[in-house]
Amino acid sequence: MTSTPRVLSSQPLREGWPPISEEEVELPSGARKRWIRMHFGTSAAVLPVTPQKQIVLTREYRHGLGRIVHSLPGGTARNGESAEACARRELMEETGYSFEDDQTELLAHMYANPTGARTRIWWYLARNVRKTGVPKVDPAEVIETRLVTPRELLALIHDGSFAVQGQVAAAYMALERLGYLSLSL
Amino acid sequence: MTSTPRVLSSQPLREGWPPISEEEVELPSGARKRWIRMHFGTSAAVLPVTPQKQIVLTREYRHGLGRIVHSLPGGTARNGESAEACARRELMEETGYSFEDDQTELLAHMYANPTGARTRIWWYLARNVRKTGVPKVDPAEVIETRLVTPRELLALIHDGSFAVQGQVAAAYMALERLGYLSLSL
Image 1 (tube, rainbow over the protein chains, first blue to last red):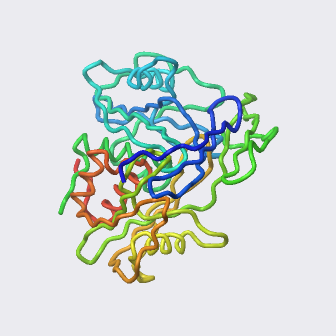
Image 2: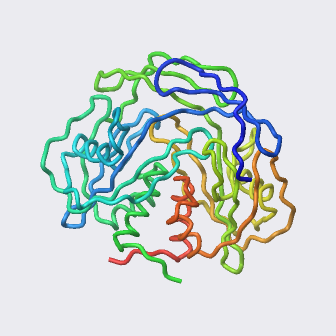
């Protein structure tokens, strides 16, 4: 089934951000289904590695989760900002670290959610990051920077401290790209 | 910051499922912030491995994404259903495969979203799965079962065919748990 489903109706559920709408859709099979969709903008995040092969993480309070989690630096792009520029700005704001233009590469462009939103997150890997600035802490989040080794990052994943799915996926991809994880069959 | 933030107001945005509310919260720092929260129930999914060490995937159309993706079998629990029972039922409905009680283990319990929902997904690993039934296809999804090797699963992740973040995270965790991926420092 590759033909496009027909959107029969789309109704906004509220004013404000993020926009949420309810759509009725007719699928190529003839079946009809209602979907809730949230419309987020571009989001981007980065796995930053220092010259000493340590990974720069943040620890922050997330009310959506109701707890403190370890995360990769990232956030939502401002109007007109590219995904890479967003990742770079969020890294500086959250940790004070930066990287040279030739030290970054795209890791993946993944979907946040299989059903409720078409949002894709841009994940970058940045090598040889250095502390060149001062973090600007958002008072609604408590941010602390933490440097961990690849082995410690895997341990944080295993013990559930690094617990947001997209972040876990990007961390594994980065460890693989950096040559720390490999397939043994 | 470990003290609990105070929810000042919580307003439902709509009737129906999933419930969505807008909360105003006062953080321990004194800062106030508004959050949109979606309230999903229990969700569970499973990475099923056959005795021949092949992984059972589905290919399905997801309107939320507007495309066909490869996925691990899973879905939302019915009233009173445990996460493991949900994973087992969804595996049977989507692929016709099943597993013995002593062949399953919890892989992880991860957050779907860092901000908008407190939803956690239960991910299982099931070994020695066998085809013992007939899939019940949901007419709103086109489901095809596909068996892949660990190497092929990694290739689907790398080329973006297996593109939903939580699924990618669970796949890496399962490959690690099964001994196919390991840290080399």
